[in-house]
Every structure is written in structure tokens, then in C-alpha cells.
Length: 442
Image (cartoon, rainbow, N blue to C red; front, top):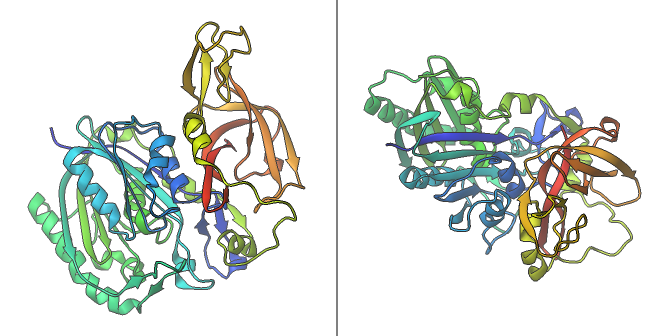
């Protein structure tokens, strides 16, 4: 049995840069408490694998540490599943796809795209994530072919010591990429015995390629680029996810990514796709969104320095307690008493209901929803996006705990509101990121 796409997912952050930033459209931006790790978790929610986890990005929160390990923990994958980072280039995503096509596995790509204020990278970029679960079984899309061309090209680059990158004049890159894109497309279609593909997705960091993708390769039904602007490593998988959201059974999809060459993937959807699409369509996520003031966005990215609160800095999270509480911090796993069924959030050794000692089993409620029992809006506590909103949540099936609200809009919150969970960064201290879960209003 051949390996195909068993499931897919995408995540588009809630915030948008509006006209006050000088943009013509609404640019998708990650919140202050989101990064490539947290967005990867959101894109891959509900997916699991026994094979491997490959995580691709050009904006890793850590170097000299495996970021994919945090994604692995938050997705509650078995310890036997290896997890590895593929970082530094947009081509890292296709490297993960190639690896997963050999043995099966989960490929996740995510990026926070940062550009100089007023630059093309800022205007034409987008933050987001997407995931593919590849393996043997009932697939939503079968893989018909994979092809690549490699070219050493000074088109886009970034000094590792700098936050923002550079790009050469787009016409030069277009002239170099155009022939490669057509060659890869022709190879895949010829080997599959197809005159054309039903849907063509062409993504690239070169704006000349994505302005008019139909000039290079045209699909019989659609020819599209990235749905949110250039999203770095996430770009090809986000484009694919957007097409899988709308494609019908037995339709072909050609994905082409022009970066330091060209990578191509040819797929054919199956009859299983309409009933097993991603729970959050890309178009719906793009359509929704809240504007963020431009100065606030710049401060989130460290491009505008604002006065910090006149209070002590938070302590750096330490390794030993973080390790001991790993199941709670990353998997949001409480403890349920096996004697009486009472669920404790966070986990405890002694049952609050029947006082049983060490009669507990771990139970994660990360994928459950709950209702707001009470909440508070704090205008004094510091936040890069004030005010801070905290809620007490009663989870479906039991369990109660206090959480901060992500992307909070106090006017949209009330007692009884339904909330879910989202993986975020609580704070960073001493170059250590403190990840945990926050509530999000459904």
C-alpha cells in the first residue's frame, strides 16, 4: 500500500495589520504570544503518528535545541516517535515531505515572517502554519509524483544574526525560477500521463512568481498562490490546504514551490476527502480577524521599544520543575481519581473529593471545550496586548481551572461563554520561552 495524505490542517492567526500600517490589504500577523512552535501545534491539533515528526521553519524560537520536541509534547505523541527540526530555508518543508513519504509521519511547517517596516517582506508576508499527516491507509489524497530542481541563486537571504532579511530585485529571480517551475511541472505531469492538473498551487518568496502564477503553469480548475501572502516554510502546505478545502474527489493538485530551485508534488484526491476535510477551512480563518494597531505590532516584533512595567522581571523557567510538570505544561494533562472519577486541574496526588492517595491516572483535556464560570478583566497587569483577561473554566466531563484568555476581547466574553484551548507562550525570561495553554473564545 502506498503512502498518501491521511489528514491535513492549517492555522491562520487572528490578528490583521490594517490601513494604518500603509498596507492595501489586511496582512495576517501572529499575536505577541505566538511563535513558530505554538502555530505548529495549532495546525497539527488532532493528528498523531507512530512514525516521525518533521518540523520546518525559518523562524525557530531556539537554536541548539530541538523546537520540535515542544510540538511533540503538546501533541502528546508517543516517546518512541522521533522529532526533528528542519530550519533555515523554505525548502526545509519539502525535505520533510520527502522524508515522510519514505516512512510515513507528520510534517508541520510554520513561520513568523518579519520584514523591515514599510518593506515588501512586511507588506507581502503572512504568519501561519500547516500540517500534513502522511502514511499508509485510507488517504484523502494519493501521491502521484515528486520532483525537484536545485539552483544556487542569490534571491532571498538573511544574516543569522539579524531578524529581518534581504531580497534581490524580483525580475532577476523570476527569470531564473520560471524555467525551473515549468520543467518540474512538465516532468510530474508527463510521468503521471496527464495533460494538465485540475488545481495548481505555486508559492515563492519571489513576488514575480506569485503575482501571475497562471502565466507559468495553469490548472484546469484553479491556479492559486499562498492564501495569506508569503508564509515562508508554511507557504506550500498552506496553499495545498486551501485547495484541499474545496477540491472534489478524483481531482489532481500540483504544488510547486520556487525557492533556491523548485520542488513539486502531484496529488490525486480520493472519495474520502469531502467527508474528512480539515475542521477549520483556510478561507474561513482568513476571512475572520481583528485589526491590531501598527505601533502595537511593531512592539510585538521588537521593532519599536516601549516602556516596560516598573516591576520586577519574571523569573526564568527552570529545567527540573518544567520537566516534572511536562505533562501538564505541554499536554494539559490533569489527574483523574480512579476511585471516584474526580478530575484535578492541575494534577494532584491526593484526591480532593475522596482523599485517595496516588490513585490517579493522567487525562488530557486539551481538546475539550468548557464554559466560563467567572472572569476578571485586569487593566493593571502588564501585557503587550492589554487588558489581561483571566477566566475560570469548567470543562466538559469535569475539571475546573483558571486560565488567561488568548486574543482577548472583553466585550465578547460573558459567564457561560464557550471556550477551547490554544497553545501559547506565556512569557520569555532569560531567553527561555515559557509555553502553556490559554483559553480562547469559540
